[in-house]
Amino acid sequence: MQIAATSGWTSADVELFPLRSEHVTQRYVDWLNDPEVNRFLESRFQHHTLESTQGFVRACEMNPEQLFAGIRYRPLGSRHVGNIKLDLNRKHGLAEVGILIGEKEIYGRGVASQAIMRIAGIAREDLGLRRLTAGCYASNQGSIRAFVKAGFTVEGRRPNHFLLDGRPQDLILMGLAL
Image (tube, rainbow, N blue to C red; front, side, top):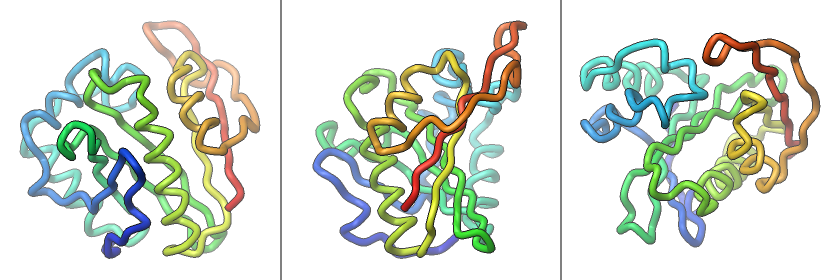
């Protein structure tokens, strides 16, 4: 989805930017192939290349029902450190949020929660949405904390939804009214 970045895309430490295929670097691809980074992502089941990742980003760019943004962390010289995506359902005025923080050195610094707050502002102010949802593995405590810190509430649990290392994992369902 094409949407112009505005001042609403920036917070004290985090800047979101429309992610384009030319932003895909080998460093970005390495995040996707790193078992520690992709542990809770469905993309962990594939091997990623520069070409396949550029193709994925191009598909997101062309999809009017997705907003795909890169995350820059300003204290690191505005380096690209992750991505955040909205899968839109305009008929119902909502979107599902997905996030990846690829740079392990910034884990625990609040980057994810700041990015989630920024995307929530964009969803409300620029897209006119009324609600956001998200889901994650129950053992992904960092993700749960980031969404709760950004104002989401845990709304439910789907038992034994995923398999992680061959063992069942619950899906945690979260939501935010805009």
